[in-house]
Each structure stands twice: as C-alpha cells, then as structure tokens.
Amino acid sequence: MSSDTAIVDDPFAIAQWQLDAVAEHLKLGDGMRRILRTPNRELTVTFPVIMDDGRTEVFTGHRVQHNVARGPAKGGIRYSPYVTLNEMRALSMWMTWKCAVVNLPFGGAKGGVCCNTKEMSLREIERLTRRYTTEIAFLIGPASDIPAPDMYTDSRVMAWMMDTYSMHKGYSVPGVVTGKPISVGGSLGRSEATGRGCVYAIVNVAKQVGINLDGATVAVQGFGNAGSVVVRLLAQLGCRIIAVSDSNGGIYDEHGLDAEALQACKRETGSVSNYSSGDRLSNEALLTLPCDILVPAALENQLTERLAPKVQSKLIAEAANGPTTPEADAIFQDRGVTVVPDILANAGGVTVSYFEWVQNLQEFHWKEEQVNQQLKDVMDASCGQVMALAEREHASLRTAAYILAVDRVVNAIQDRGIYP
Image (cartoon, rainbow, N blue to C red; front, side, top):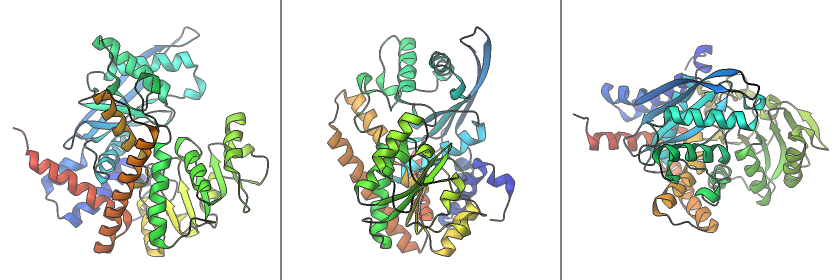
C-alpha cells in the first residue's frame, strides 16, 4: 500500500483495505466483497439536550451495524469530540472480525456521539445518554443489537441506556446492553476483561516468539480501562513496566515503575504523567522506547509509516482498535516484529460481554473465577488457532486472524443465503 495521507486519516479506508487484502487470499467473488465492504445498516441522529445553564445544544450521534450474519450486532458506544460516521463504520467492521476470530455468535456494530464529556456535568451526560438511547431504541435490543462501553463511556452510562430502553418497553431488559453495574445485571470480571484478555494473548504469543515474561520490559501507551489492567497483570507476571502514558503525557523509568503506585497516581491526580519519579515523555516517544513488549492501548493510527522504523520492541500487542496503519504493519512484518492484531488482542472485552449477555438471558450469574477461566479458555483457543494458521500460511498474525474471521463470516452468509 502506497503512502496516502487520506487513507491514513480515514479508519474506514484502512478497514476496507485490510478486508480487500484478505479477500484476495480467500479468492472471494465480487459480490461477497461488496457485501463485506459495506455496513448493513447506518443510523445518524441529531438531537437536542438541555444543558445545566438552560441553553439547548444539538448533538450528532451514530449507530452502525456492519454485519449480522453470525448473530445480533455487538459493539461499544463512545463519546468523543472526534466521533465520525467513517470511524463508526471502521469500528463496526473490526467488531465483526473480532467477534468471529474468537468465534462468538455476534456480528459487529459501533456507535457514538460527537461530544466532549470533559466539559459536561454528570447530569448533562445522563440527559444526552437517555436522549441518544431513545433515538436509536428501534435498532437496539437483546436479540438485535447489544451496545457496550467504549471510549469515555462506562458502566453508569450503560445503566442509563438500559433504564431508558426498559422504560420504553415497560419492563426491565438487562440484556439490551453489557458492561452494566453488577446491581443491574452486569457480570463479574467485565471491567477488567479487555486488559485481561490482552494479557492472555501476550502470554500465548510471547511463548511462541521466545520472550520470557519474567523480567521482560514493557511500555504501555494509554492508561485507561485496558492499559491500566495490562500494566497491573503483566507486573504480577514479573514484567518490568518501564513506561506508561495517558492523554496528558507519559512517564519513563528504565528501572521499572510500580503498578500500584501508578494506579494511585492516576486516581489522585488524574494523570500518570504526575508520577513521583522517572522522566516525562510524550505519547509518541513512548512508542519508540527500547523494550520487549509494546502495548498501544489508546487511539487509532498511533504507529505510522514514519514511526515504524524507529520502534524497538520485539512484540506489539494492540490493546487499542486500529493503532497500526497498513504501511507501518508492512514495515513491522519486514523487520520481523511480531504484532498481535487488535481483533485478537483486545477481544477480551466482547468475550466477557458475551458471557454477560448469556447470564442475562439465563437469569443466572457466574462467579468471577468462572468468568476469568472461560475468558482464558477462549483466548488460549483463539490464539492457538491464529498462530497455527499463520505458521501454515507463512503469514503474519494479523493476516491469519483476518483469514480465520472473514472465512467464518463468509461461511455464515453463504449458509444463510441471500434473501429473498
């Protein structure tokens, strides 16, 4: 793929390019390619919200369902000033492949509202959530489309969504969303699932590429729900965390950072960049530090063609969605850097969301140990399948994961046939 700023800046163009590459490998026909390249449904809504000072603001939100051949649509809701329809299209497509690569009976979806929650009160966020939920209520449901938390949304937002949907139905429907508080049908283990699943993937792939986790050096970009859990769990496995960052910057100490102290620093000051020791560094500088394992757990398009030759890690585990551009991916493959792709590395969240959904349908809840063990079983099996396919096909882990995922979706489409 030639360098193209327009493509690099457009996550949907990247998602389509990735699909096209695998479609060539699978020798898919033009009709199937057209089905897979375009979302099944797209909804854009604009809606008013009364702010605390009495003025009325109008917000734009989206909900995109990419493909539902394998089951109900599944995907997060994000609140961000940078939400766009093309971003939702890309993320919904990646959710389709993510669900398929770990063999969950879901299709892919994504939603979001263009807003800046850092400038909004809790009551304003609640009003926005309830109105957005009402606008998309005819699309979502436990048998059709199940939202979950994503960037700048959390279990509280999911509780508001569930309550709003239930008010319209006239009875409680806990299965309409996942990532809820335990008190209203959430699952034990869900809050840590994305990071925990990423660590399970790292353990599997590190073993294959010969990295001993005891003493391995790790840099993590992003200290949110996924990154903070990765830091804590890898530290427990004996890794030396040498750098972490969040949106305000990062901190580096070659001798190692204390995972518990980092959590406390983030909680008390709002940023890990305020950590009491070590050297300050930028998010970009963190990506090129010498380390054994690099975990991008922040935003899309962080590892670019410009940065890829400078990256010094042996293993990259994509805890974020789409952090590596196709150009950078090709450079990593040429350099022998192993990349655990996002659709596998961060599939822990949707896997435990599936467990939560099942528990809601059964009205029977599991112990946390059972949730974590089931997650480990899914991640171990999926990593094993992807690594074995990569070895057979002499391909990268990303290519192998996409082959496995796309093939499963294609088989579902072919088995169901085209209506009418």
